Length: 164
Image (cartoon, rainbow, N blue to C red; front, side, top):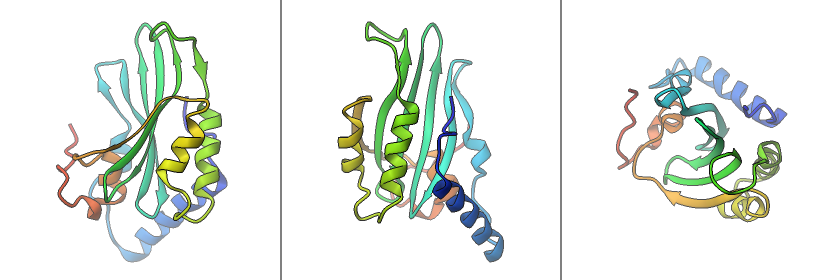
């Protein structure tokens, strides 16, 4: 299940970022296509990486082995702050199955369509906590693939992402 429920705003941001890169002649340190990958032998990985603009990215972690799960991460690359939550799961534990991916993406798109000063991870977490699971905000010390691809200049003191 992808992030295809995205908005026109997201598509416009991606197109604008691509045009800006072409116009500047700059190259990304890492191709975003490299971030769509299997991270756990045949049954887990990352996909659907999107640049939300202003140093923020989103992607989906998936799991599918005797059960399935979709976790979504929205990350502010420079500080390394990540909003993570479970948007769908089935047969992962004793909890009832659910799929709220589309609803979660609508909440994020609504926040992202306004001024970034109001689109905080904390506000998103508050809105998502009523219908998704395991909502948390963490500060990561390692650079993520999406941040390395879209915003390599924001690495700072974080451990550099190395594809592998």
